Image (tube, rainbow, N blue to C red; front, side):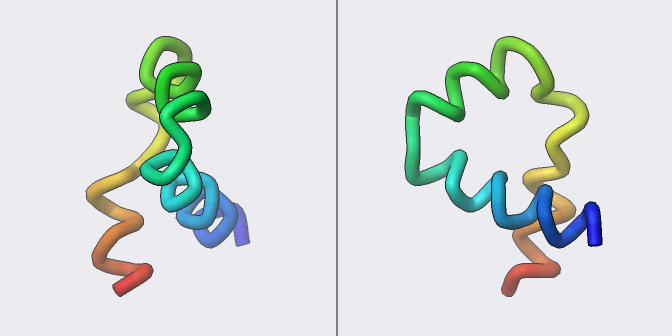
Amino acid sequence: MKRGIYCIFSAIDLHNPWLNFLLNGQQHSQWPFTSCQPVNA
């Protein structure tokens, strides 16, 4: 379930530059964008 949650947050991240900035500065390595995109697709 955690992976799915991260997937959702990552998608929101791409749409929201505010979260993207926070995540990009704090937890960028922990957010599997590349791993989430194929799963979401």
